[in-house]
Length: 97
Image 1 (spheres, rainbow, N blue to C red):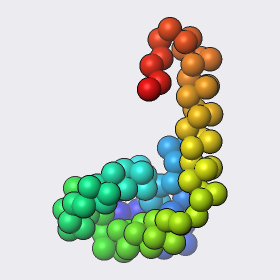
Image 2 (image 1 turned 120 degrees about the vertical axis):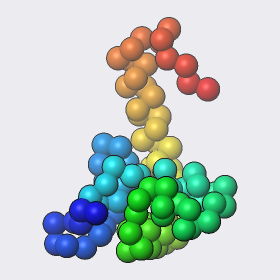
Image 3 (image 1 turned 45 degrees about the horizontal axis):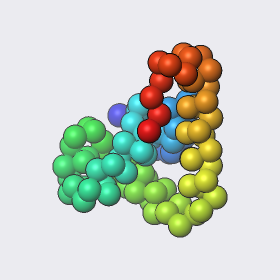
Image 4 (image 1 turned 90 degrees about the vertical axis):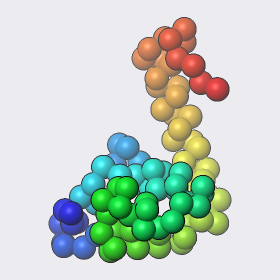
């Protein structure tokens, strides 16, 4: 496990989205398993996370669960990425459901 520069695990914003510091694991990856109610030990082992990493991620998710502006920002970002992809690849090559 690699920690944040000050030695603590944190949630950071990267080009991939909100990510657990020192990993390439996004909160969106974890949320897929959490919403389908996989047990926490399974999720932790699947992503090879420490107890501290999973706890920081869960705390962040819980504290932002009801933040509608957070959800709106996520949707806005997904739309931006989709538009960029369509412009880059051409509309005929991209399928957006």
